[in-house]
Image (cartoon, rainbow, N blue to C red; front, side, top):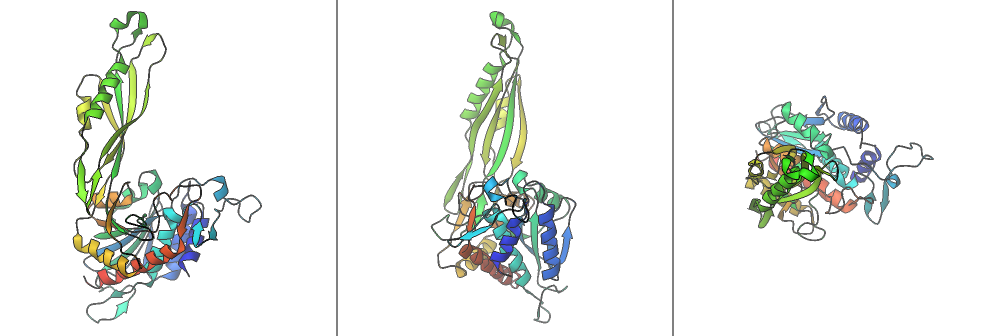
Length: 380
């Protein structure tokens, strides 16, 4: 089976509201095509393992997608009106999930199937020997698009690889037609800050406490904070704080008793912006609504191993780079897994109305994943 065929099969399966059918396909494919130990956990994550040893290398992806557009779903005259449309033209596959990230998942599945794990005692190569040099894993999570639900569940129930290659996009970061190796990315913390006051009639405003005034003072406090930054791979990852929504008041002639605003915070590995300072005045409450962790690989040998495999799989010269947004690698990294990101998606492709992925780059990723598995595990 080619990476194009497997990507087509995966992309065609609807998985923006319910990942069950995609999980069924993955589980069946792994049981049919490999001799790995395959499990499906309570939330729908599919994880396959072969080999054993002191260290584990995992290829990690997800099989949920964001909601497709009408044009990305088959019409009612098709065999399945709910099936996603997949089209091939000009060397690319088009369809919801091609870039984010069923194409990368297909490449990882094939590399996992075709990888052999060396047994140190005999020198033989086998797909799943009990005495092999290390364990090789492929994992596909649910709920990445809604905050990493699947990744968090897997970690809470014992998923703990030593190393992971996460198949999110890293193509065209350092230059055109190059798939780079991302060794860090930002996280995102979303907060709601609520200012409480005392309602009063606007004609007697001094008898109340204006929550909007308190909120604007808190906003000034947010704007005065200096987000941290960190230097990685010759780049500077800079944190950012942005007030994005505000809501308060009940009527034109009433002093408002409540006003709240939201803050989008882009976090970096290491320190956080001191948002707690905003709550120091009386009447200010801070609630964290979402906290997607950043990621940074601290194992230089692992990053260089993946970079060497990437360089051997393409004509261009890949580099170690950073990404601006959060992925499941953040959850893994926070739990202690050394992660890098390597995948076919290019900036601006994910979640778009005409989402697509390069077939040549899919083949490149498949070969890189295969080389990573072979070179890293046989060296342990």
